[in-house]
Image (cartoon, rainbow, N blue to C red; front, side, top):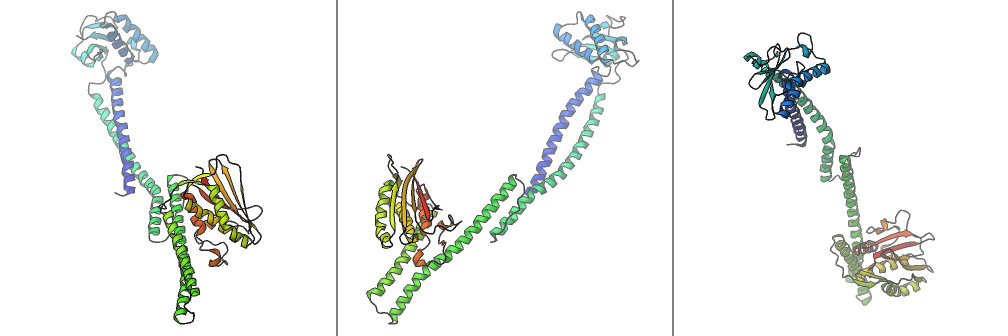
Length: 460
């Protein structure tokens, strides 16, 4: 059963149940009201007298002293309702007979038949008065008798039932029509989503669905478009990364092949210098493969970290000393500043992996700082986190590329050579490692020039 048919059946069932409930309750209520009107004095305007008499008997347990009560009740009802008998006169001018359960007349409004018995015809046309257990405790007869015989209400109720059934059928037809229209309107966005999903499954990742309104289907449409955009972006990135990896692998392989072919052809001698050139290219390949492996493990959540308490200040100072010769060669000054921190600079981290992150930040800072420039490292605390920032005095990050520089193989300056700029994976790996430690790595431009990379880690 398709969804549209389910909607139609659901609407019809709801309509039928509602109509059936209304018909049943209306039938019960209508039958009761008709019975009261036809056989409980409603048509003659004495239904109030009937209620008063029944309450009297239920209270006193007998009809003793009821004559005065009946006369007062009849007079009061006549004045309140203003109804009249068939002769056009008021209730008090009608002949009311009250008899007990044995049909003995206890009260006659004309005073002529008290003590006598009701005739069979009068008893048949009289209103039966009920006690607390609904047993017959007396009869109230109106002169001239009731215009209806017992069972006469059945035909009227049957007519009302038929009218209710016809109304139900008409309402059911309208419900079916409304169900069809609503089903079409509600399911149209779902069909669009289904068609778009099928086109995406066939490879058209540029497919999107139109979204209008703010209801649940609109939210679903927006989520679908976001998913499609993510898939398209992932496919674009995958293609770009595949091309970048191929390029990164092709360069050292081509150099190795050229050297080996030259040695084979006798162009280059087989000496230590040529072997060292091949070894350098092999190291580049090994480093690239290891970087890709690290990223793959981080993406899969399988990067194993040996977490121990690490003094971030001590680790940073040690790594800075290792970079001092490279900085001195380019006349770049390394400067470290920290704030006073009684709690220390302990973080829970894998010292080797955390060293990779800091190495990458220092290496990039020295690479992009001009000769005679300065690289600054600063440690501080913010809340429960320790912040390590590394700033250079270079040209800074291209505007709008502060996040893109963490993409794999991203290069803000396309003219940079691979040998000078590395593989383009360092910052991507550094951010993944920072996040694996529960921290993050971000970048921004300094107001006075140069880039600043900020590593935040939870304090131990």
